[in-house]
Amino acid sequence: TGKPNSDMSSTLHSLTEWLLTKGLHILLVMVFAVIATRLIRLVARRISRRFDSGDTTDAVLRPESVKHRRAVSSVISSVAIAVLYIVVAVDIANQLGLPIGSLVAPAAVLGAAFGFGAQRIVQDLLSGFFLITEKQYGFGDLVALTVTAGGDARGTVEDVTLRVTKLRTSDGEVFTVPNGQIVKSLNLSKDWARAVVD
Image 1: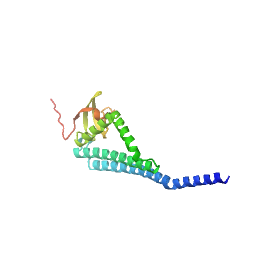
Image 2: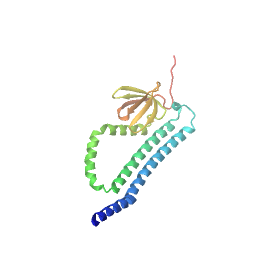
Image 3: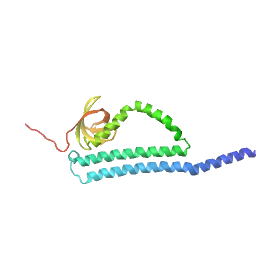
Image 4: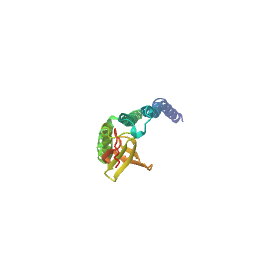
């Protein structure tokens, strides 16, 4: 009966050692990821508030640079969070002993299959990137978007990410339009507008 007891104590000892080293490392990395995510979002909100603080005008009348900077800060924060999660996932996989190097070939095959299946998402991301870099519209702009699947979407821009644009109509409804489906964007409040009264 001495051998099972020694096996159990060695297993318990190795488990305790793993929990105090790798387990603690994984826990600390996950806590760091949660804190870093909140910090990134807090910084993005503060930057957005700072852009808006010196600006008492209506959202539609804000300068184009302020609208563009708000859109860029939103995109940068979401990309930073995505990169953070990828790094944390790789680190946790490494701590669990998963062979990262041997996963490269299956990941390439899986990536190719995912690429064929996720063409719409890639199209949305690329379109969102060009929408933001070309400054077609920003937060608070009144826009009319022509969408491939269902006609027009018209409203005030509430959120712009790499994947979607959210518009609020005058009735209070919210359109969520994938950026890859936008065929034409008409900005009704860029720089200046004109009203013709007969």
